[in-house]
Image 1: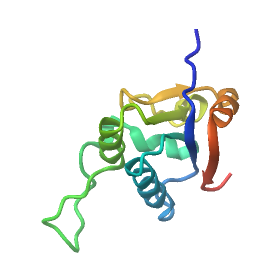
Image 2 (image 1 turned 30 degrees about the vertical axis):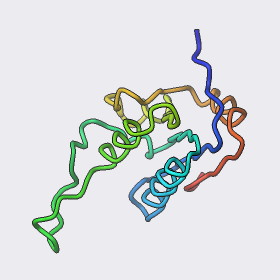
Image 3 (image 1 turned 135 degrees about the vertical axis):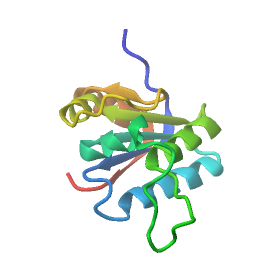
Image 4 (image 1 turned 90 degrees about the vertical axis):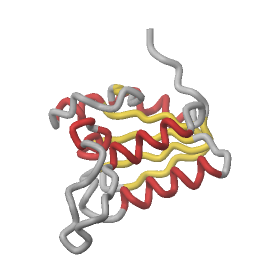
Length: 135
């Protein structure tokens, strides 16, 4: 039986290569800001953005040579922190086909993989939809 998609205020769709620009960081900041203001949010990742929630990323990014002592959290850590802090208002989905195509099999446990045909149900369950990235 398919899971019912909960109604949310916003659906943020992340598409394409997550590290090609600052789009992913901006989308994560927007997601956090919306949640902190009381909104409910769905995040749908497609294409290489499905790699954002891979457990293999570990807790931190590789060290920054310009700031060696500082630790920067990985995108998986940022997503997990948001999912833990807002369990009843943040829902994270990934395109199963895009994920499988890229060998992304070990997602955070809160991530729900759905076929691309299911995306329409996510859109219908949100008051507003924002597409971030390149189709």
